[in-house]
Image (cartoon, rainbow, N blue to C red):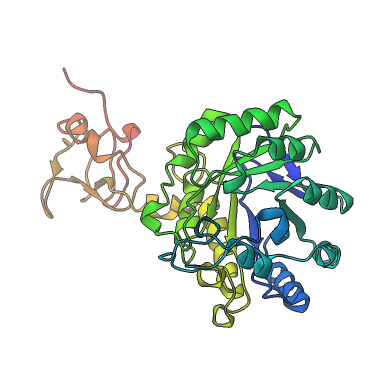
Length: 361
């Protein structure tokens, strides 16, 4: 079982409620004020962390106008756009990082970012970031994985589009470089992702195969998939967040609005709270209902020496299985039938062994 560890003031582990990350991505729409408002909204909804992404268009791609440097025309959100233009629009300027981190920390929220190259790691280290995220499409960039792991901070590794061998290589690289606290997220890198392609059964497999805390980076619409993931062991949940989908933005179409983020926080906590410990035993909430189970009761006044006759319909016999509990279980009917009452017993008395004489041979 993977060990527990902390991110900021929060404990992450199998026996702790999900650590929920509000991913801002490019939903700031080029406005620092909007970025700060997203931080405030995430904090108000109860998210434990707010995540941004640290890159420039030049650290991501080349400003080249060729087909291979464009998003496929049939892409649902970004069809035909050049990679350079898309990243230039979506980037979070480096000079915004300080104000975003400062505000988040003042609100009790963990701020962190996904770096996409070594210069981004240098910036985030200067801000004393608590945890790092490796994006799905960077999972094969083992030099970046090693650079991030060498910080000694926890690492969250997203696996969208990866093979199991690629995940294993990234986990191995992170651990070899010094990462002791690792989270591996199941992920589907389509935007938005169809729920039927979420493959949530990956979650317990990832946790067991790599001895890590597992979670979900969720790009589906709504909160149902992320909530379901908790039942399968997800203890880190990442969802994109915006102020209003109608405002547009590169990721707005599959992002949660603040009221939906609050629903996610509530539903994932409830899902975690419902898991229990797996033991079969009556719960405290079932105490009253268990009182209503049927048991054997004396149905008419009887005298000492009378024979016990178990009936199965009203007016049959002098003992019958009725509600509430308190007497012998209905399963004891064959064993008590034909025995003698040891003393006088009034109607409405729960039948117990001490009311019966010895069993006749």
